[in-house]
Length: 385
Figure (cartoon, rainbow, N blue to C red):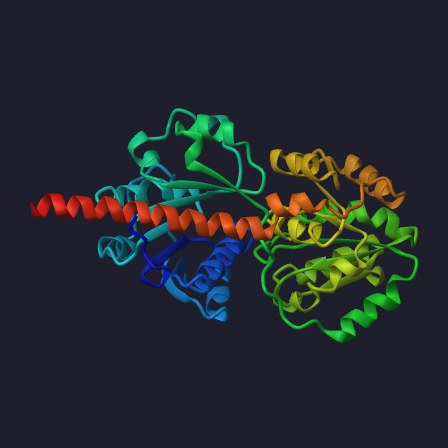
């Protein structure tokens, strides 16, 4: 059996996004894992985006895309710069993190038999996707990597591929974090006392206070009774946020400004030590998972992923999305100790934890690159003969 050495394999991870959420974090996490395994990793990301900043800060190779690039998802149009990169055959694998990239990249790689193609999936398809996939482009993908707990059978049916092409990844490890600020730790310790600490993350790309206002309103009920305090987490400094002024005003209007802490990346390691309940907000599922693995109970929208996560772990609870009344009731229940508490069983970490995620990712790359290498060599020998 011919086996490529990892050091001889160059990987291209493509994520053209101006947001910072679960997809972007996963792109960075995968890049770090592969780099540790000896792969030469390049990340193709939107210039000056949050992901581009994180890639450079991590010391990884960045290929900047000057965009934007907007299309329906069923177009074969590929940006010229990216098309030239793919034509060069310099990469042994290409990894996509956005579903609307599937057609153009598959089309560009249709004759590149020696290049593996991976697609990470983060959610189930809506009914509108069924029947529109073009089979040759879907079947060009070597592996579909399922983030978290997605329904493998349903996705295989929607895509029209065999289940063996879908690989459940489990829960990824957290991002490497900056050194914890001792002053923040002392402040939280002094302020917690007998208060119930609720926290949630605000994605840095959010520009409208209305997107997080339901969570502020739901938490304010306990805060006004002086029974709870709120932690707002943002990876980047709050003063850089477009919504900072509106957020301060809203906290004053709700009467909870003095009982709210706005923290950034310096506090990510210590928040789990003080947080009694974590609310999962849009695009921030990965932080919820990270805190879950550190023992923090959570409330999350009732999506297929979180429903299966709660079923698998027995921890946390869910509520109907956009239902402010139920969210308030669930927070009250958590305050009364009615949300299941961890720790998770050891067998869960073995099968679905960060270690299992890293193992599955590396194994997918190794087997697929080896397989594509053998195909390319066989074609080359046939042509020579």
